[in-house]
Length: 157
Image 1 (cartoon, one colour):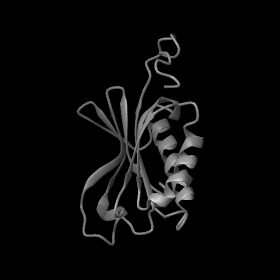
Image 2 (tube, helix red, strand yellow):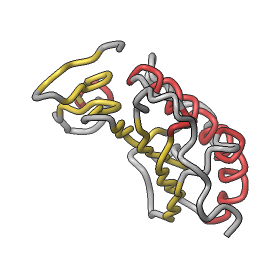
Image 3 (cartoon, one colour):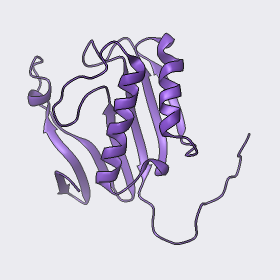
């Protein structure tokens, strides 16, 4: 796991301090991009931002920002020992409900065949004014049992 910190049986992926990532704001919080607790991965809200450089991408384009957010989630899940196919829940935050179709189509391409649960929320704003969408995720790290899929109860309902 890249840049991981193990504390009290929780693995913290890509720890950072907000004073470095938001220098224009008067903050000093120790956070991380993802936490692995037992067999669950919790991914911090991802936006149209390059994880390596902290540069915003897709400015003015909600679909491009959603695409970058999902790429970041995929990368963080991989670093945590999981994959997109093991997503359990997504929460999608939009600053304008008119972005919903473009954003959901973009997220849908990343989650085709996965069937996570999803909650959409319209908010007044995000941490930076250029960010139009934020996506946080919860996934599992599967135990290798060789038994395959758990089933599809409720499929098509």
